[in-house]
Length: 78
Image (cartoon, rainbow, N blue to C red):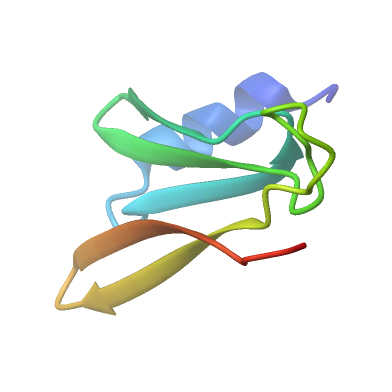
C-alpha cells in the first residue's frame, strides 16, 4: 500500500478505534500496536495442519460499551 503510513497514523490517533481486522493471511493472530488490537484472520480454507482438511477458522466478535471480546472458532469440515 502506498499510503500505509498515513493509514497507520489515522488509526493510531483515532480514539474511537478499538480494534482492526484483516483477513486471508496464512495464520491467525493478534497484535498490539500503539494501544490498538489488530486481529489477523487466516484463510477459511487454509490447511495449516497439512491433513488435507480446511481449518475453517473465523472470529466471533462481541462489542459492548467499548469492550470487545474475540473468540477464535473453527467450522468442522470433513
